[in-house]
Amino acid sequence: MGIRYGIGALIAVTALLLAGSGIATLSRGWLLPWQRRHIVRVRLFGWAQLLIAIALGIQLIGLLAVDSAYRTMFTMPGTVVLLFALVLITRAQRPRGTGQGG
Figure (cartoon, rainbow, N blue to C red):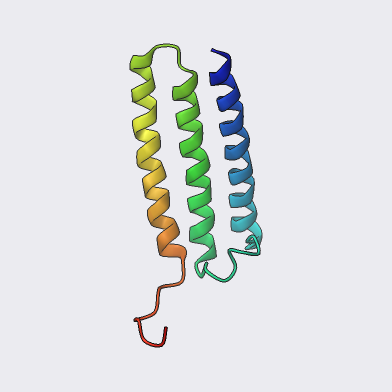
């Protein structure tokens, strides 16, 4: 049972960092330096970061649920939210070139 709480703490810290980054992106337009070259729709990317934090929170609840029947009830919606956030991230990025010139 101890390993679940250790993993849960790691997921919680990651979710809080992503939520903070998403809030900073939405309120100030702030991006990490390595993201600035690829992200063109900053607000959409901020919403995607918040959705990832929410998805991790949902899956964290599922991880800490005692009964394994409830675990699936939380991990499946968390996975759907995570996939939707992935779609938002791809929409927020700079489109690839047409293949000409490199």
